[in-house]
Image (tube, rainbow, N blue to C red; front, side, top):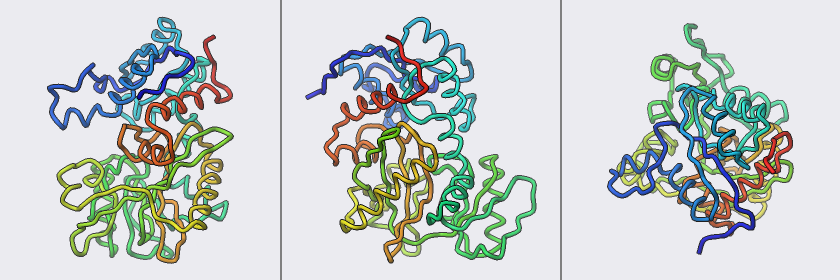
Length: 346
């Protein structure tokens, strides 16, 4: 049964120009379906709910948005962009443009996106507030790789700004300076970004989904488990783990509600709300933690505007908390409409 909102909205949905989904997924290969799954799930569900929905494909022209605002006069822009002009960090500037146009939008504000996109800056802010984050060092391009003495092995090496585990593999976990140098140079070469090496925290991989602006709500903590992980491999959310169905099956990937003691659950909820506020996040986000055997939570990454496809972690976590997919999308829009500073068509 589809949830029917009281007010039908005019919605433009901002997507990459190559990810404007067809009206039906029939006839597409599994790979093609996976590429447009989020866009298709969001757009088709909003239409079923009775809203007026206009997908807007973007690459590097802001006037495409400006023209859509004039043509459709949307109540809200549903932002599914993860990059602009081929660069992941530019999505924050698209949101700035929406704010300049006084247009209500879904998801995170520009400041929150800027802070969370920089994994080092995120950790610095949280360390200032005395929250537990892995010790780390940053390695810019065209600089000699020199490990600070305080940074002890094993270390996990990744891009400072890429999302979706791009550049992360089992080889990202290094145990000596030679491997550290090799992996940092690989990130520089492959990702064309600064690298960050951080203390590897052994433990459970737990995600917390949050939604809201001032009043923040958390959904059920979610855990990533690999039940058939090869001997000697660590439970790292690599690129293959996140995006390769055959590999997922091979390692026995499962995501499910995390089994936590009531006190651990309360601690994680309080901690997540603090982090959300310290990083000036809004809209919705997913926080990625490691939980040690001693029950300590280390924040690994903050992910504003995370993947919200149906049957993915964020939506599954919300559903486990009693919020089905259509109601989740409606809630995301309500939060966007209520965000202070955004304009709204009447």
